[in-house]
Image (tube, rainbow, N blue to C red; front, side, top):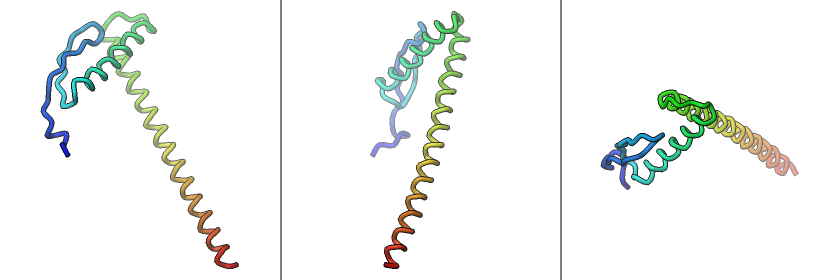
Length: 105
């Protein structure tokens, strides 16, 4: 199995918000384009929603938006995991009670 450290870095040319960048990554060019396309689309949306033209302000607002969504998703995942653990524990207690009750019959 190939380790991430064993991959060679490569430069991929991308265009984000009208500017060309050379992104050096160990990921495939397709993946790098997928990420850059996502950021580009979000920057265009935010520039339009907030009526912003300054690329630096748009980039900062986009970074804040993406970070907010990431943190919200992490929080939801943590909550969902806690609920799943609680449900499994309840099921375990139920099965223990059921097994004890069947053993007394």
